Image (cartoon, rainbow, N blue to C red; front, side):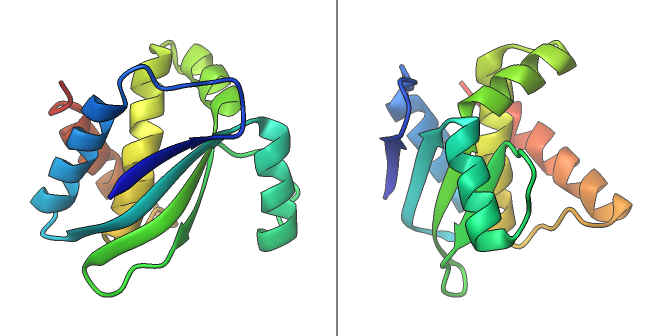
Length: 136
């Protein structure tokens, strides 16, 4: 089950569309959907989590906590809507498109994809692009 939680004034207008799209992504990756929580928050909120839990004193657009068991995906995905907005501006893309990229990025991590090496980053970007093209 995919749920959306808000720690800021932001709200997704089309939760059902995002939920269906993420569910289809999980299925196409041959994984099973467990409990996945998206938490939309501010830079300040996510920075605090980054420092407290990961010892990183930086701003970021996403932090995911993976509780998956094998191919059954479970986790909490925190997304800074402030950071997504700034990145959308910097990359000259629509806010919703950048948000979708970040949302699927978290899911792809749960599916086993990494992004530490250049090769891994290229594969992750290719997967993101593939699933973004399937978004309705």
